[in-house]
Image (cartoon, rainbow, N blue to C red; front, side, top):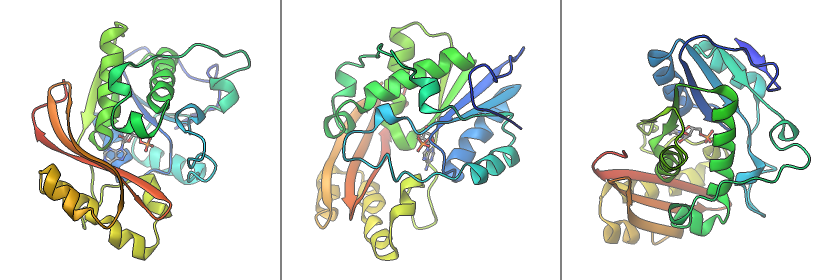
Length: 252
Ligand code: AMP
């Protein structure tokens, strides 16, 4: 596996390329995306970039888990061909000033509680699509609204790639895998199980009741590109967790 730290170091691929954008601290959710990309493409590029533009003030940018050596090993074992790990300066050089304005879909739910989040996500993904030129890019259902924002971006700006959404990978106890689970103490992890249990009811009223003990940002039914989901964001101690379950349909 090649590690490319700059855009110039990225190889040119003659055939189909699958791109998996990530922020690292790999777990089985990331590995499922690599696997899906491996199955459908000649080559797989994973990007590892903790994108400052998608973090708000007071969020966890500084303490976000980072372990590039471990990630490189896991990516290589998963059949990733190139790990693209640019610096913030490579992605946002001095004078950078153009942003993707996501619109209404980026203002609701996550967008309401994380102002500017989807502007940062859409901008970095558009940049990654232009840099890597993938045939397909892979996103997790765990971040259902993000997947919907990216589909909207591809549609609205006539981008020439396919977006694939991979099912949420969960631990045996039901908690959706997330790099942020590393922040949880054993006690907090126990409390966090209320989130998948609440969502599993498939009912926003019941879910709200089951989450009564936690600091809840939202528990809401949402429609993402025709797919109905029950989505929630909660705080457990200092850790913010999101999750969702599909109620009906496909995110088209
Ligand atoms: P992240 O590194 O957290 O930004 O995630 C990178 C990609 O992995 C995103 O498309 C996420 O939706 C996806 N992802 C994260 N956690 C999971 C999970 N538990 N199951 C499936 N995909 C996931």
